[in-house]
Structures are given as C-alpha cells and as structure tokens.
Amino acid sequence: MARKVVITGLGATTPIGGDVPTMWKNALKGVSGAQTLEDDWVAKYELPVHFAARASTPALDVLGRVEAKRMDPSTQFGVVAAREAWADSGIAEIDHDRLAVAFATGIGGVWTLLDAWDTLREKGPRRVLPMTVPMLMPNGVAAAVSLDLGARAGAHTPVSACASGTEALHLGLDLIRSGKADVVVCGGAEAAIHPMPIAAFASMQALSRRNDDPAGASRPYDTARDGFVMGEGAGALVIEAEEHALARGARIYCELAGTSVTADAYHITAPDPQGLGATRALKAAMFDGRIQAEEVVHVNAHATSTPVGDKPEYTALRAALGGHVDNVAVSATKSQMGHLLGASGAVEAVLTVLAVYERKAPVTINLDNQDPEIPLDVVTKTARDLPSGSIVALSNSFGFGGHNAVIAVRSI
Amino acid sequence: MASNEEILAGLAEIVNEETGLATEAVELDKSFTEDLDIDSISMMTIVVNAEEKFGVRIPDEEVKNLKTVGDAVSFISNAQA
Image (tube, rainbow over all chains, first blue to last red; front, top):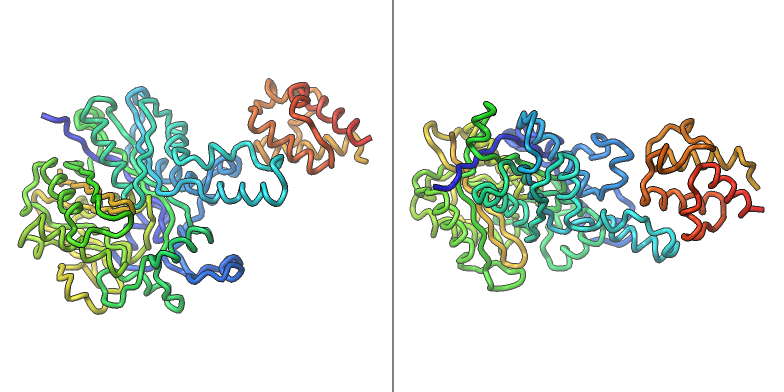
C-alpha cells in the first residue's frame, strides 16, 4: 500500500491576487487580470500583442531589496509563493534531511539571460554580473526555495513547458511514496512578460491579438477565442506524508490521490487532435488514485483559449470519464489570469485543492458563445457549489513538446 | 580626482546597494570577508561597480589583495593618480 499523501499548505502570487486568499476571492467572483502593457518596449519593437496579465502584487513589494537582487523575477515569484505555502502549512519543526523541493518553470531566467546579453553587447564582458549564471539557470527557483527553507532531501526542477507545474506535483508525490522525503514543497514559477517571449509566442500564432479588449481576450471554449494571454506569477503547495501531517495535528486540505505524466509523441507543438496522450494521462491519474469516473465532480481544465487546443482536452475528458463528463463542473481559470506557462499547473492545483476544500468551483469568464463542439458543463457567471461527501477533482496541464500531466485530489 | 573620503563614501554606497549593509558600517579597517561578510560574487559585483564609478580598472588578480575597505580605497586612489 503506497503512502498516502496530503496537501497542507498553499501559496500563490498571480494576476488576480498576490496571495491565496485574494486569488481565491477573485476566482470565485470572476475577474480579469489582463491589462494593456505600458512598457515602452511594446511600441519600440512593434509587438503585435499589446497586453498581458501581470502579477497583481510585484514581488519587490514583498521581498527584501537585497535578496531580490540575487533572483531572476521568476525566482522572486517562486520564493514569494513558497514562503506563503510554508507558513500556511504551520510546520514549525522538521527534519530538514526529509524535506524536498520540486519547483518547476517553463522557461526559467529569461529576463536575466537577455539582460546579460544586452549588457555584454552594450558594455562588454566586464559588466556582465557575476550572479548571472545562478540567476538564469532553470533550477534557480528550486535552488532558491531549497536554500530559503533549508530543504536538503533534493531540489528538483521538472521542465515540461506548460505542464511543468503539474509535473512538479507528480514528482513530489513520487518522492514521498518512495520514501525519499516526508514533505515536499511543490510549485511552479514564471516571469516571461518580456518582449522576446511575447514576440516568439506571437510568431507561432499562440497569443490572442484582442488588443482593444485585454480583459475579454482570454476566452476558453468561446467561439471567438483567438489565443492565450501571457500571465506571470507562481503557485506553491506543501505536500506531506499523511502520517507526518497527522502526527503534528496539521490542517489537511485534501489528499493528493493520484498523478500522471504522458507524452504524445505526435507533434512538437500541436496537440494530438484525438487527445490520445491526454486521455492516457487522465486514465493513469485516476488509476493511480483508485478513482472511479463517478467520483469526479470538478475539473480545472488546461483550456488556454487557443483555437486548436481547447477541443482535444474535451475529447480526452469524454474518453476518460465517459458519459459522466456531462455531470462534471468544469472551470477554465486561465480566462481570468491568463496562462502562467510553467507556473500555471501549480496555480491551478492550488485552485483545485481549494475547490474541493471549500466545495466551490471557480468562475470561467468571457464565455459568451460556447463552441458547440465542446459541450462541457462550464462554470460561468457565478461560482458553483460542489456536492458534499467524498469528492474528487482533476487538474490538467499540457505543454509544447506533447507533455500531458494530470493530478487528482480527493476530499478528506 | 576623488579624495580618499569621497572614495570611501562612494564605496560605502556601492556596498550598501549590493548587500544592504549600512554605509556607516563600511570603514577603512573593515575586512570585506571577515567583518562585512561579503562573498566572492558580491565582491566581484562591488569591484565592477567601483570601476564604473571611479573610472579605474581593478584587474582580477588584484582583487584578492583587497582584503580591507582601506586596501580598496588606496588602490582606487593610486589608480586615479
């Protein structure tokens, strides 16, 4: 019998709230975190996309000036979220050799890398900061969280594009079940609202161009969806062996019942139109958690608002849940906060945990005309109550490269 | 040409910016590593910022000889002369 793993701490910094209580309040209300970018580089580089969803609380408002100087913006967000999750867990004493970190990013220190390149070209090698390498490395966020919390059972960085944050939970569950750690701080962080990634994602036609209406741009499942909205921030979850949590009398949100990761091996960016890899991931996570389709009451969908991405996820959900999919309350929270790339899975995991714990499914905004080819029961307008009794919720994340990751959480 | 007092004040600002240490803590007889707890990465950042501020070049092989704040002030003063 595998060790049971529970979730005991939550943290987040996002475009709709700089901490978990604020984010959750807004997620239930239904707000948009997208705004027109005021940066001069939008016009300077003639970017085709003029908006994004910035973190509502700048990391520099929370962190000390000197500590922040040694962190890429993505790491700053990660540390902010990890500290909130750690405090929320209430862990006072711990064997630090049994505490691990699994903290993901999609891109890593892109600001640091490109700033250093600008410095090299404009001022020469002498001016390239000595902290450049540790700040740009993708494991920088996991390392910083490990250093901050004294986590010595390993600091890992799953990198699978937009599935990274969810894959961090998959890895964390494995670390505890296999006995390598008792507590893992899992999460994902991203800070890529920089002209180069915006130009690159726009170049592949992945971003919405609804420049005259940023708040209405992220519209998963709507017939007028035209791409995702770039977001930034971080999410963090403290996961813990159940016996460890019980021994210290912890407040337990829910069980991390099952996780899975699969690969499409279909195309480097396009989702498999049949959703076969996603279907296998859903089925594998449910098998891992010994979950019957009828137990599932809520799905936090990947649903990025791209024309080609949203439908295969529906196909996969129907294949995995059968006719029961019609009874499941689906929330597409990227409608509110945009797509946080490697952080999205972690932030959406926080929302999924809260949905089960508070028995409320958050709102999907901007769904005016639902795509008839995606007949899901989407939670719109107002948050929806979830049933009492034992319930399960799923959260999906898919990433360029054909990565599929799913987590399943069960009420306690 | 900056006086030694001006160089000390300028260095103290650079150290404060990099480490958060109070400028008053940056005194001539203080060791960068022992007293001010400045690691090698911060030291290199301070050196590069001092080069820009005072218009001097501090060769990498010279940095290990700058044990105290006073060593750095003397080096910069001589390099400016």
